[in-house]
Length: 150
Image (cartoon, rainbow, N blue to C red; front, side, top):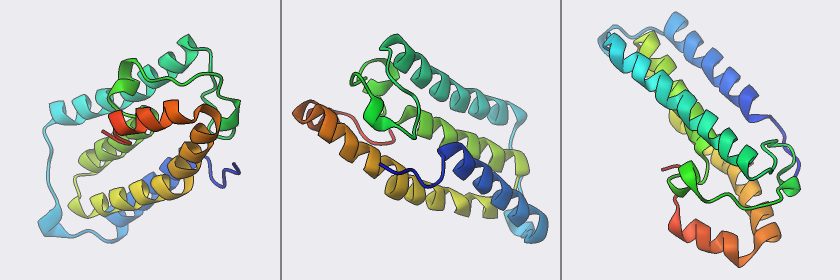
């Protein structure tokens, strides 16, 4: 699998675009002030998803490198991976929600479906194909039991 853009760069570009929308295309009636506790809770949830995903991979001694899913040595399906097949990407999405709440501009949330589409099309689907190649029916059964995002 040839990864075109690393996921962290996709997140950075999305953050930049969200910032640009808020700064240069403000829409007053979509402005809001989210409670600080919701903003903090959202950031903690996003970070937790990513960290728990990385920990699960470390425990199973398999790669977290999105550039080399073919280097996976085991299928991780327990812990947070029993809730989401892609908790690290889910964590990134939640951090984008956090940033949107922090900015307080409803228009920036238009970037979230674009992020999801991009990740599904150019990151997750190719990874899933590689996982099927590596783990066969075991991965297909996992796909039936656990949703892609949540």
